[in-house]
Length: 390
Image 1: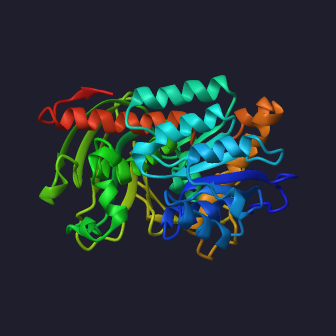
Image 2: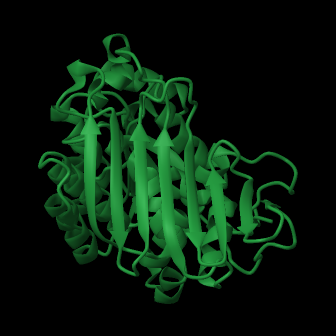
Image 3: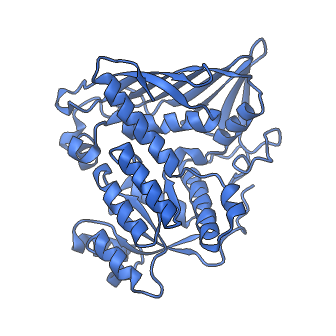
């Protein structure tokens, strides 16, 4: 079970940029960060409109004087305070991530950023350089990676339970954008604007999630890929709302990734199936407390979160916030990640290298890899699905 007594002596003073009123992701950040009292929301630039920012921030209990009109003012003003912020989460549209993250690191802050962290690999690598030079933690919000059964799968593969990995099938294919919803949805509209979203819509928005899960579970790296992408809602071009990617991995394994927003009738369909030489495992985010374990020639086994037969010595497996049989979900996953972010931020500030080395979290390298996926897929798709080096 997750040990609720394991927390920081003093919560990290924390702010948000973006994530204002009506933001589903903003609420997820605040819920995850506040769950274990490791972070305390004390400031923010929640909205580009100063009045809306102040009205929303005060409704959350933030001092109105610490609800700022923009992120630059936030960082400058907080740096002058003895009780100024120590970390910031960035939940703004994609095109702003690089500038805000860069300013935050230069202001001496730890950063948790939505993905994709930047438009280009060069920009993402620059953020890594800055974070390293300034000894700051840079976390990337791959929010599904806090589910315990993801870490059970990772441990099973590491211990050889399925044998050498041969095939990885990845998909995140929902149906909520099968019509031109962006006409009436501001949240969808910016995602389908290349000036704000970047060179990709659906691959960056959802495909990168399941791609990161594949790397986390297997430890494998992509050698080369080819991609086709489509804009079934024609007004979205040049951004895709559907994409298929084929991948070759460095160990000889192969994989496919289907990312879609036009899978009519589907809720999420984020699934990952990893096929080894003697068994397969499969995880589905709509049933996140179960992991299917299928050994050739034997009945299918459904492994349940919170049970003693799992690899409890792996910390991620044991992060159960309620006993097995009860449904844990999305907010618990985010809380598990924020718990890890807090641990490594404190360790970084105290020079505790052992804790840093022993604490997994989705870091800037995860962000760089996700941006690289988008770049290579766009390169391949725009060159008639040519195979490209990863």
